[in-house]
Length: 37
Image (cartoon, rainbow, N blue to C red):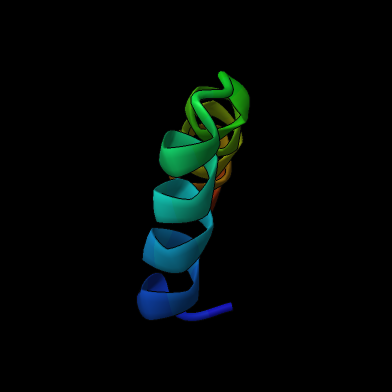
């Protein structure tokens, strides 16, 4: 999944006024931390 697709997801969630984007960011940050070990 590319960063552009992530930005699109976050943008859609932001426009929907939902908190889903924050959970997506949280999952993404966790995965990034796991892969950078």
